[in-house]
Image (cartoon, rainbow, N blue to C red; front, side, top):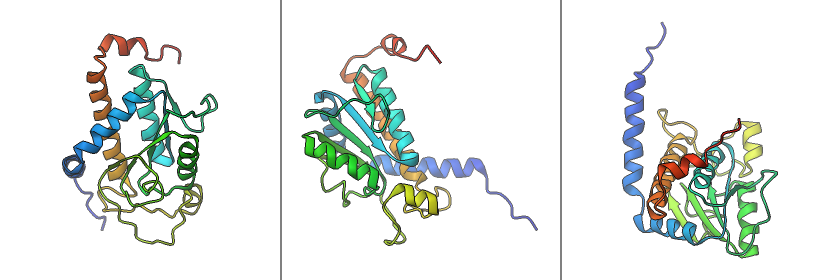
Length: 205
């Protein structure tokens, strides 16, 4: 007998409720600190791997729409990082090897590191100037490799959570909502208009 599929609406509402809990738990002073560092930066670089990397890319795109000079680490057109630049890292575990390497390089150059994570006490967290905690991490097995590429090839995931938000979904969705909220705050801080944003939208596809 086929098991009845749970209500998609109920699952969506459960996830929305979880995101609300995440939002209420975010430290507002940390959020303001992130905004201040972005506003004071020369350029903003974004790093992330896997789905977290996709959230980071969306954030970098929105920063560009607001008129910031923003780049994604690893892209062919990304220029050299300089002192005074900010690196915003999206990493639920805070220890994905490729993101750790990018943060270490940025730190050595003299840049500022801002981490959006579920694991503040992590290799990136210990070098970050600003940390935003999104939810919390439940790592089922400390022996799972920290290298994202290895985890992807072997199917070993660090951020397995409840069935309604599997494989890090709660962190990634929370990070996406949080980053969009930061964009809204930056839009207000810079007094950007919708017309200004429209002028920066892609018109060659």
